[in-house]
Image 1 (cartoon, one colour):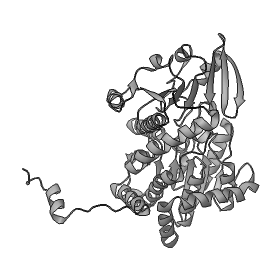
Image 2 (tube, rainbow, N blue to C red; image 1 turned 45 degrees about the vertical axis):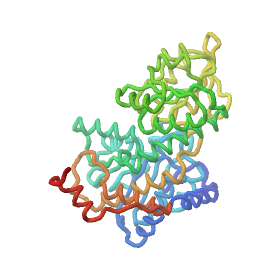
Image 3 (cartoon, one colour; image 1 turned 180 degrees about the horizontal axis):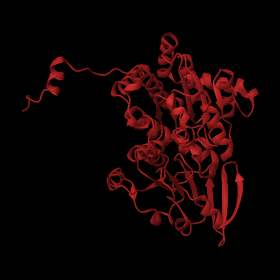
Image 4 (cartoon, rainbow, N blue to C red; image 1 turned 120 degrees about the vertical axis):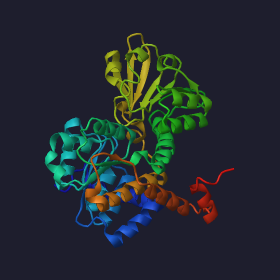
Length: 416
């Protein structure tokens, strides 16, 4: 099967989106031109499980231009842009994704993406790795390595590695600075606010805005919410991050204390049951709940729905009326709100993340059998290259060390 999308006639509209993203992704455009000439992936097959957005589409086309056979499945039931999916199919990508897949269809799409018998996997959430290791171990003989682009996926993979359960090497693209310092902070910060406002059209100024988790996603979100006039509260389990949030000027408290006073709650932790029954029981009527983590486990929507009657009053807005009359609003089914209710991160920030992905794929192919079954960091030279290309695209110049300065920094003999 070459593709399975909702409506192939949407391809023309999707192509316009791809063209717009390409215009705003100058780093990967430079890499793509080199790939066209050098064909680093000639004879190689790359299977991907990613959010099917226009930015992802630019990465897929760059890999194809580099000589790869590319397949793509969506990494979330609500994040696929159907017009982009159709356009990629027209461009020769084996794409299996449409918005609104159920659980069975989701894994059907992943299985189709793996039919190419990949040499490299690219994941957003580690579902491909997990599927291969549990049900498709016959594919392991062809796989060189994989890569993972989101925090939740890296957590899963490091747990696999710690248990000795990781069956092939994986590169943690999420953890490299040009990804998480920008994509997670600025991308998630802006796109999460975008998703909340598109779904609800609420005014954030004056609201009490509760952010669960002060990792890079939480930091970005808290900063953007404060910038729009919200009074921000941070909940954390990590004492160091809690101190940082406090010193950044945010109130810090447990979720059970924030629950009665919050107007908007957003989870950004990668953990389950961050907001659950005990919190719903004390929330005030009108509270809005959203999640910006990868999986829909951070808000226990099942428990919420068991507490009252539910109805969908707007696209991506579900209301649960509790027995005492209080109404609690859940956005995007508790799935990642920035992609389910909006379009995800801006192209400019995804330019860095997907340039990392493209260059890591090339690095994997070159390294081949040298890689062990563990989680690797992105090589620093790749991270530095992406950063320098970003600066160049912005017309920004920086200083360089003189030979004397370089010697001073690398020679322990020189001191005071």
